[in-house]
Structures are given as structure tokens and as C-alpha cells.
Image (cartoon, rainbow, N blue to C red; front, side, top):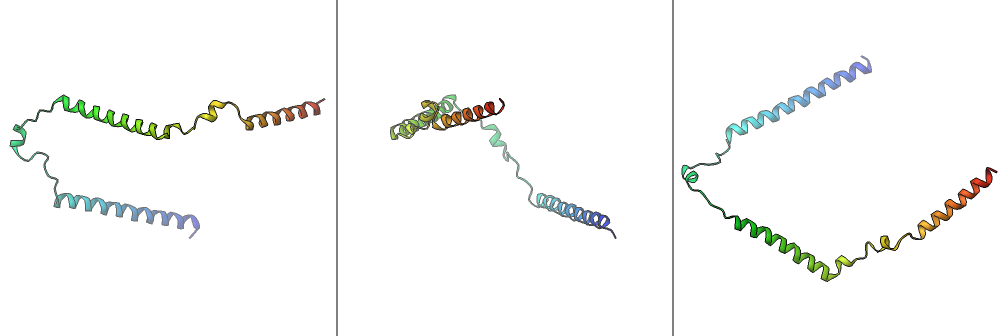
Length: 118
């Protein structure tokens, strides 16, 4: 038996075992659904008759409370100095020494290549 035939047989056996295992998992799910059926969402008719009215004011005040909590947290962070960490200072300062060194190297490389072509 050649390597190709042995590889094909091994692949078929592996796929067969995989699909049998998948079938057993699906069978277990079906059996468990039959043994433990899901409960209905609404069990009593009395629940259907009772209508709960929710005020739109209650929803708005919850949103306002969230906004107020965020504002208080930001004010607290600002008072601690966390927002003044200086992360953007280097960007505002302009080009740094690394850029200058790069420009000098590029300029010297440019002059070398232009001198070599003469």
C-alpha cells in the first residue's frame, strides 16, 4: 500500500470518527431537550391582564444620572492631574533630535551619491 492510499484511508477514518462524535453530541442535545423542555415565557393569563405603565421620566432621569456620574468622574480625574500627564507635549514641541539626525544622515548620503556620479 502506497503512502497516498494510506493517507486517504487515514483521512476517511478521521472524518468518520469526527462525524460520529458530532452526531452523538447532537443526539445528546435532542435527548436533553426532550427530558427538560423549556418553560413557557408567560405561564398565567393574569400576567397578560396586568399592564405595567412605565413613565418616560424614569428613563430620562436614569440617562441624566449616567451623564452626571461621568462628569463627576472626569472632574475627579482632572483634579488628580491624571489628564495633565503630558502625553501630547512631545507632539506640540515639533521635530526632535532624531529627525534632525535622520536629515543629516540623508543629506550626507545624498552628497556621497551625487559626488560618486560625477
